[in-house]
Amino acid sequence: MYAQLIKAEHAGDEDTARAEAFQQRIDAGEKIEPKDWMPEGYRRTLIRQIGQHAHSEIVGQLPEGNWITRAPTLERKTILLAKVQDEAGHGLYLYCAAETLGVSRDEMTEMLLDERMKYSSIFNYPTLTWADMGAVGWLVDGAAIMNQVPLQRTSFGPYARAMIRICKEESFHQRQGFDIMNRLANGTPEQHRMAQNALDRFWYPSLMMFGPSDAESVHSEQNMAWKIKMNGNDELRQKFVDLTVPQAEYLGLTIPDETLRWNDEKGGYDFAGPDWGEFFDVIKGNGPCNRERLEARRKAWDDGAWMRDGLLAHAEKKAARAAKAAA
Amino acid sequence: MGMDAPTNEKPEWPLWEVFIRGQHGMSHRHFGSLHAPNAEMAIKAARDVYTRRKEGVSIWVVPANEITASSPSDKGPLYEPAEDKVYRHPSFYKIPDDIGAM
Ligand SMILES: [Fe+2]
Ligand SMILES: [Fe+2]
Image 1: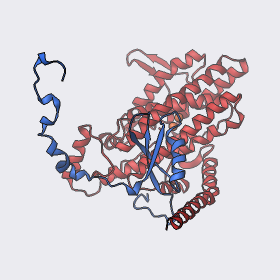
Image 2 (image 1 turned 90 degrees about the vertical axis):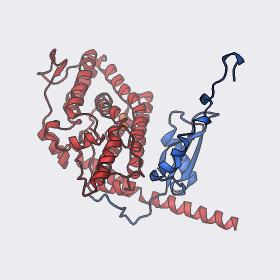
Image 3 (image 1 turned 180 degrees about the horizontal axis):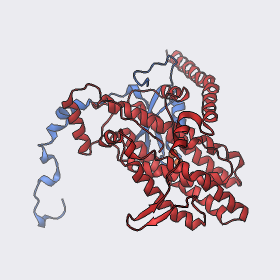
């Protein structure tokens, strides 16, 4: 997902009575707020998860930002601009939620830039044609929604509230993507081919967004108990496939999976999993665009330094002037 | 991972808490927070971050470090005294049916 492979940090040597009372609050559906006592492991895991989620929103602007100046019409351009601006907002909501846990936004940014923190693997794939804007909105935002909707009920108050705001804005993202796909799939044969090609390239990376099978993850159990993780990876992936296949059929596009077929018994589709070797390679930094994405973020951070410092200096000067005038 | 106390020396823009009045006649509600160099910029940023879809008609920003919050451990002393004071609610009183609305 936007937060993949989140390890449960060790709880440390807190007294167990407090940890048990904490777990009882979570089991009772109470929200944990920043000033409440929490196990150190809960706090650290959340910083990692919310931070990774925030970084994904921010880095996720890059593949789409790539097409703002080349959108086919003024209307598409304003829509894409609004969508990318929303993603910046999502990043900010999430950084603020993480900050309530005692980490600063600048610190998180630096951890992203020196690769101590990650962002979702999906944003390391290139957006080669306009149809990719359709595939990203439809599939990538679609997969993100699948994970974000249940996270509205996560146990940490600030995170849950950020997710509620984000979910309100996300459905426009998926719809505008589907709308692009719909237009292209029903356009000229060349446009249809473009749409199919985008689906071909984004299908498996989208399935990877949910992370490897839970069977392989020892951390999901603790994170589920803490209500930081709400559903299993396989469960969400299945749900995503079941919802998406009929949409692809409507578009007249073919999902690039010859093994894909309806399974009456389980009431869902059987489908091929992605290449997990590729996934781990992308996570390690070897995807098609990892270097480019981080370079773009580093450049933005460095090039913006004079602006951040300048605005602060200006604010200080103005405050000093106002104080002098009042004296 | 270095996720403990903030380590960076560079000054960070201060944090502001954002309160927005959703509609005329309603009170301001806490919406979230953001970083900005001063109050004026905080209002501009709050406009962009929190009201892109006409969510508000008025914005307040307050420096986050100026807010004093009650402590979670005071929950008992602060709120329990109200628990046995049901007579503060109108539903506590039985009013005869035939006297009309009250
Ligand atoms: Fe988003
Ligand atoms: Fe989105």
